[in-house]
Amino acid sequence: MLCAAATFAVLAVNGSDPPPKPDLTQVAPDLRAFAGALPWPTGGETALWAQGVGDLGTCGKQTPVPIASLAKVMTAYVVLRDHPLAAPSDPGPDVLVDDRAAMESLSADESSAPVRGGQHISERTLLELMLVPSANNVARLLARWDAGSEDAFVARMNATAAELGMQNTTYADPAGYAAATRSTAADQLELAESAFTDSTLLDITARHDARVPDDPAELPNTDSLLGLDGVVGGKTGSSTPAGGALMWAARRTIGGQERLVLGVVLHQGAGTTPDQGLARALTVSRRLITALR
Image (cartoon, rainbow, N blue to C red; front, side, top):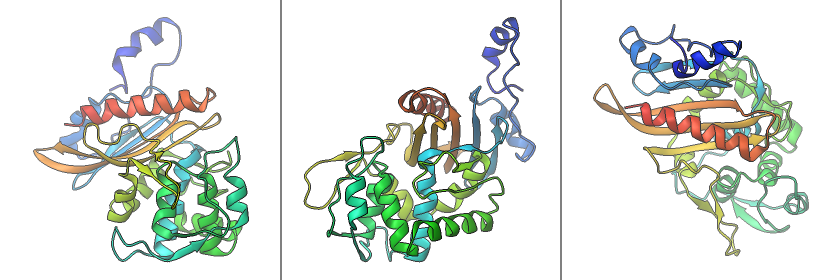
């Protein structure tokens, strides 16, 4: 069964390889027909999971590729494990914004939040700024606050990945800006199963915007699928080497029951612009989400 049977004839005429078949070997036999009929993307990598069901399959060769800002999910996961919030709305301890984070907010090449040196901002707010508008400077600030240095924090990220069984993942930085930060869709789904079944992380990524304290500017969520077709959270990533990437969480009815469904798509439109890659990741993800009923 092909990931996208409708494209097979065109590809065959042009002499290209047909799109890959989804790997459904780990899918329960009574769900294989359902999973095989999904509109799997023809490029990149994809992995799906449903709560109470398990794996819904993978598609594409699971080879480590740059994941861009999806790395921030691991950053948030490690920070929350080291500094847990008592409840989803708990602000947590205040963090002092250093001069480096303030200087990096002026970068024209990276996503950032306009924090100011000397500010005290709660852990919860910083997590929102990192995950919602995808601020790289805040990801690095949280790493330094948590572990004392970015290098020490990256070591924690990789140790946590190993604990979760993410054997094909390497983190080189807390923001995902480095192309050496690489993973597979299957590995990122392992992380999603731990991270997005946590109400705190899911609640943060469900926000439509975030704000720096004492700054009226609304910083919108980079995930335009939020609120559509049952989507309740997620994290985007995009760069020229990574293409578009998306980790998403949606509530869908499968087998007569509403379930939390998690998906990861990577390497969509790699080599194009970050905006084009992200648009592709959002499009193929929405097709999958819509079909999950």
